Image (cartoon, rainbow, N blue to C red; front, top):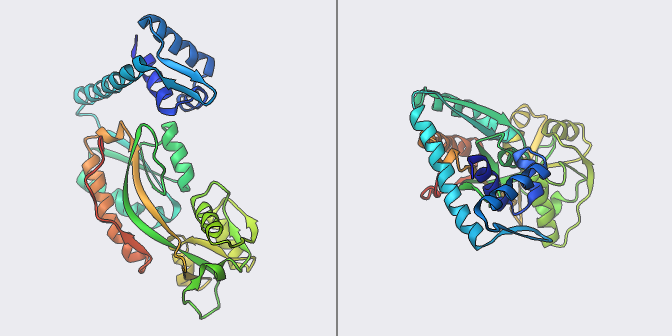
Length: 311
């Protein structure tokens, strides 16, 4: 039994799927299968049950999983303790609207409070941030409507209402019903995007049809098409603040129903053990005030509960 085998075994149990685990570990599936087989042979007992839906741990596998998590966490803790003078590095992902509004504030706040911490920021849409977190390309993310992920923690911070975005030149900036918003040909991102999923789910719940005029995986592209009158967008207000101020776009609140999504800070088990995590949480919490002010009543900070285990 070695640490690599334990790491591989933990990821297989967390994903419940050999193919997905191999992809996230970035190794070939046969190589992963061989490592698990060698682990089982070394212990002399089956650790996984294979079935049509994937894999699940046997009773012995459940016991090993619990211990393996503890062992890997202790190894990481020991590594940090013997290298405590080394500079900590954290990769944090944010959505485009968050990067625009609070990205610089976060960098400066963390730099001031924890000079030993090297914080790097990456920008991407929420569902792609989740993918990067699961692959290990990011340590933590600030993303919307993050699902429960095995092996990762999350903490709800904030709720945000979406707006209907149309070309500028109209003086009517009052609220619009969701049904009226759907009367426009819409320019929407790809199907996996959280905003689009929320729009489609809400429309289905209310028996409404969506007219998708264009699909584009780019916030800047959506804004450009809307400004040209090619359709309307349903977007976070933070992504269009500058254009609304310049008069090239008009943003109107949506009600009946409100389209509201939740912002989470989510991270890996390793990130949950960082010595600098309290500093990052404090900086993120302060940034929520900045975000709320910028959103002009469309943002709603949540009361901060106790952080989740390992976070």
